Length: 261
Image (cartoon, rainbow, N blue to C red; front, side):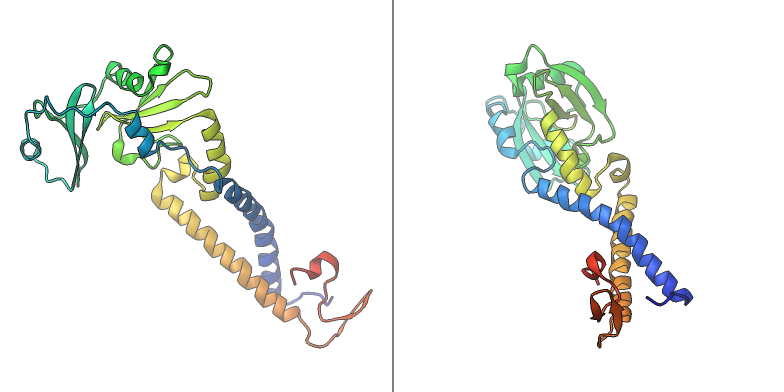
């Protein structure tokens, strides 16, 4: 093969070579994690499961109607959810300011939960683990599994103490469990969605930075493909002019090197 002496040719071939080495490693991780995501995504608590374990709706104690409750707290909600918080009916308003919970019996707004109230909610959700449930922490910033639950923050993290190492997250705004993870779902979440989406908490918690990284890697991938196409066409001979060990060839590359060319 003729020596590569022109500076722009050197730049082209080395750009393609080193982007290819780095990009191939990234692609293997992306490919394998994508296969994992066909069967397991991020940990979640489905609406069906949450509702199946929610307290039975009882509006017999409701004394304040929805309109009056919204007016008392100065809200113009886009969506209204009616449920229970313990044995008390509540309105959960979804508006421009996020989520706000108002007791339907008094019209008072929910002003956060203490540890005992959170434990009572968690034990009501999973009574089979009543004896082992313990309060863990109050989160004001997302951890790895609550990056998509920002609307419900702050969150209270509770450990159920079972063999599956279940962790339950309860919203300080609504008094509802909004996320559940186990050691198994966390592991599959890491090797699947976290790797595939580059969803590492230190990076993903900075939305603009994460977006720039994803876009930047896409641009580098485009440069990798374009530089390979340009160099491949440049080195391709339409007549068999390259003398290789196996005879004349259109490509200067042999063996495995010939496949990508």
